[in-house]
Amino acid sequence: MALISSKNHLLSYLFYNALKIDIYVFKHYYFDNYIKLFDPLTLWILLQITNSNKWKKKNIHDINSIQGLDYGTGLAYNYYYGYLKVILPSIGNLNKGLIEKIENTEDIHNINIMVHKLFILIPSSSYIPPDLKEASYQWMESAMDLEDEVRNRAGVKRRLYHNSVYKIYPNGQRSNVPQYIVVEGATPLLTFFEVQKHNHSETNLYKKYCKEIVQKFYIKLQELIDNDPECADLCELIYYDDYDCNKTKINIAKILLERLSKIKK
Image (cartoon, rainbow, N blue to C red; front, side, top):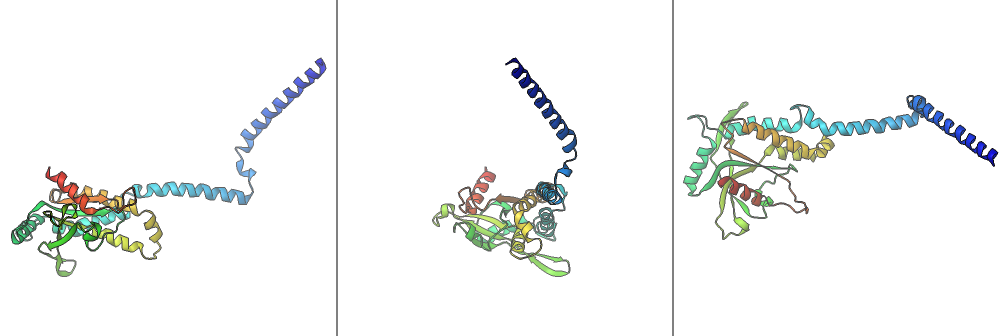
């Protein structure tokens, strides 16, 4: 029995030391030279998986890391300097600003536009209907336009710009007193939406990152407005998701009424 016990101890000792040697060899040789463990096809597959994961992580941060060269930021600059800076501020006696146009409309039509600002809709889907009634469950309807802004721009003589006044019936009841508001969608986003409907080389990428592009547009546009004393108090940006958590289409009229209530307080 003593002999058998000694043999067992010896075998255990040899097995243990052999295992230690195997671990050491794997750790210091095979692990450091792992490429030798794989045939070329297996190695290629592993490299593709690794590169794919790196590319996915890189893409997530790309929009936030290219410092203003992304599509959303470019849209914001174009919209701001090509449109909002044209229609919002007053330029002495040469051009009426938004405030004067709103006041003139109130006098002409005997109405009260409670907040003298331009409300701009920024849906995360980038889609804006031609008539905002379609996004309001019929709570809203077009009432009139502010007077035209006429400018000579890029060779176009007497180019016209104008804004629409809508009226909102609280709770959608025509018996309620309507609230008047100057509101429109951000037109560059509609163009972006239309781009996504066509089969261009960038289309799939734009579809994939649509929400991020719209968010970058919103963030940069808000920054530009806030940092410009001539426009900061003349504009309200309304960013929203088109559908709620229950996949129900939102009522943009409700969102506008909520914002109006906050501003008036």
